[in-house]
Image (cartoon, rainbow, N blue to C red; front, side, top):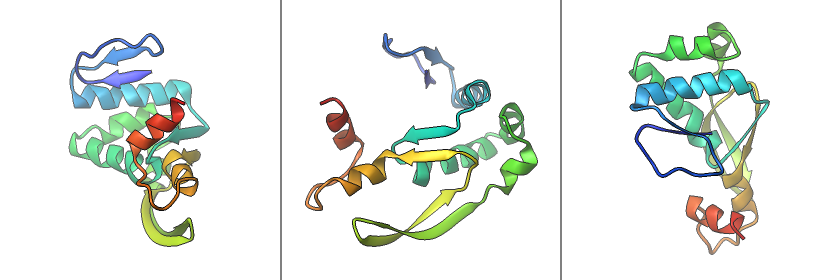
Length: 134
């Protein structure tokens, strides 16, 4: 499923839903999450960005309560998800990461890519795309 806010070229590998604006896009995301109810989330930068961004954006757009009422958990449980700030190690290099603790398994492509990429190379979404297309 590909949720977009504006018209885009169709992709035969995905169902594309044009939402028209950011609020509708986030609402569509909540409805997809409700119906799919994944136990595992796989993505690039999901630990450091995606959920934190979504929570902050729906608060700003004033649809937080509506959105999380659509999701398969209670608002009370979701508001107890807390931002965590911990030291982690990748390739023996310690750094701190801020993330949102949520009740499902997240698999982070970015960390996996860093683990298997020589230190002299940068790691970004473009690199990941090249590797996964091989």
